Image (cartoon, rainbow, N blue to C red; front, side, top):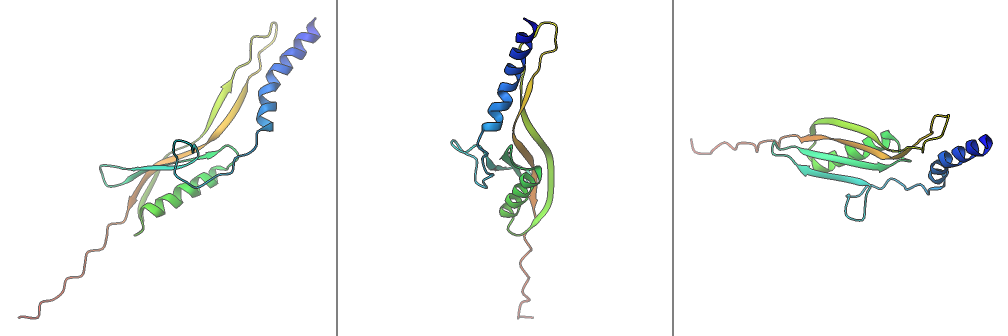
Length: 138
């Protein structure tokens, strides 16, 4: 009886891991996030003149790739150059899958990585003032 309980517990706790291992990796795509697109970038202007930029990449991507996408979007928003970058959030989003109670044993759970998110503020360099032309009258 005890052996079958242990086998059942291992089967139940290993199922989410097996499903996670069989998933086809999604490549990181640099595109706007939308209704049908869950990975990419999203930005909005701030009242202070800056922009809030969010980048979401799939779990197979690295934090370095997420940051490079964030920097790329910052450069696109500021064609004249970026004066300040403030990343205030960089995290791996996870889903915890708890296991059921197993009598006389600790239950096993599983964590499923969903993707990396990087979010922050971007401020563009101020445009250079136009040169003042001297008047010819004088």
